[in-house]
Length: 108
Image (cartoon, rainbow, N blue to C red; front, side, top):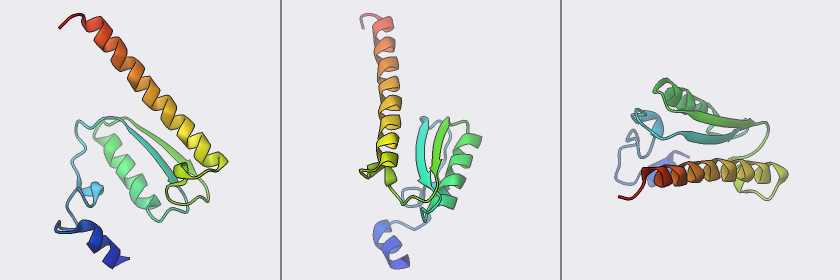
């Protein structure tokens, strides 16, 4: 696993925020939508990341499922379909708000 992390990091130090988001500055980030499972290897780190983002004032919506694997929203399972529905709802909500902002701004 350590070798896989080194390969992922490439020329970057493993503590660089691009490699390890836990080391990033969360100030001013857009809202986060997080899906995690209790069986995911990254579960503890994702919870830490969500808490750090929340402390920095970032709105976080986190969905925790029991006993599923990493990236479960990508799977063709009831849980995956439910997660994708939530993602679609959130993205659609932002798109609608953006359209309203453009409409109320008037001509450039």
